[in-house]
Image 1 (cartoon, helix red, strand yellow):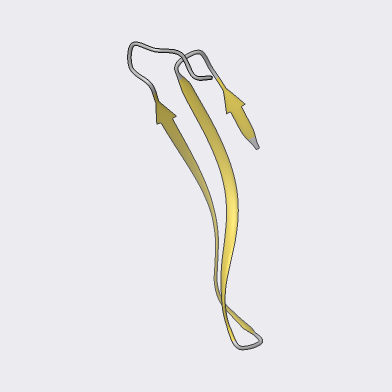
Image 2 (image 1 turned 120 degrees about the vertical axis):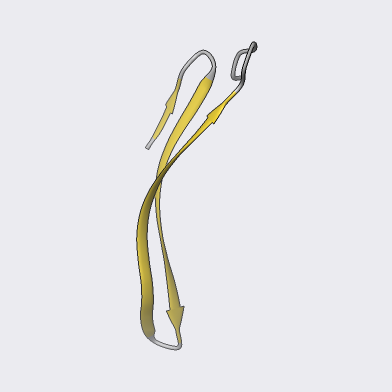
Length: 41
């Protein structure tokens, strides 16, 4: 999921780490980047 605003980008993503054939970690995160005083391309 990606949402773009005039001065921000909001992204939600998932990832996992494996060791051999086993999944050892799984996560879902949301991140936001801001551009103060400017616009996001």
